[in-house]
Amino acid sequence: MCAHQPPGVPAEDLEDLRFGPAPADQCVGDQGHACRARQFGEVEQGVLVVRRFAAWDTPDIAAAIEATGRTTMVLVGIETAICVAHSAIQLHHAGKRVAVVDDASYSPGRAHERGLRRLADRGIEVLATKELFYDSVRTVEYANAFHDAHSDLTLLPGVRL
Image (cartoon, rainbow, N blue to C red):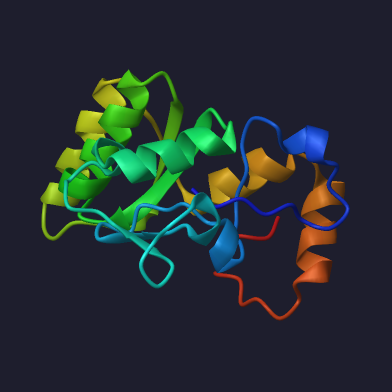
């Protein structure tokens, strides 16, 4: 659930769906165990600890998410069928648009696919990293600007059009 504006992409073009790594002091993420959220008040060593399967069920994290004013949440993490699923479902129930990135989430064995199917059945978007990237940049021009500005990133085969 981190946001980063790629170079050359106007902010208004990213209002609905944001992506990419953000500085640790601007990130609210579901990592299954902890969320970095330094700018959201008192936290121990820059970490809000999740003691529930759904990040949204942790009041400090729910408040931090609400404080962003964002309505679209992109989730990745360990245990697709548990932590990611519980967080996605609770955020969805809270009226957020939720997208889970299937190739950036993991559960062992068949639990990953079962978790993704459970989310899709509830109306939660499930997409791949490539889909998220191109949905976010929306044009070849913006995609090329991002790739050019981040030439140090290693791209997986098939990511660049």
